[in-house]
Length: 91
Image (cartoon, rainbow, N blue to C red):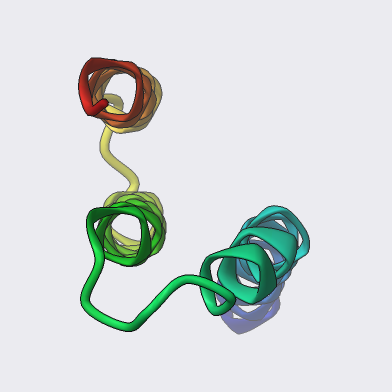
């Protein structure tokens, strides 16, 4: 029983780490590109808000995986849809 719980925890940690690596790989070029613009510009705020939203999605995914809820897939799908909608909606 304890081994199964340890394996589940390890699997969740690996998934969260992989998601964070994807966010960083996608986000770091955007940050370096937006750093050429003056700080506080709309583009910089857009990149920051997108990364913070991605972080929130990862935290929600980890929490729901930890709680072993069946809502993980719909919540993550809705969160990704919301991020893409916000990103495309901003000028």
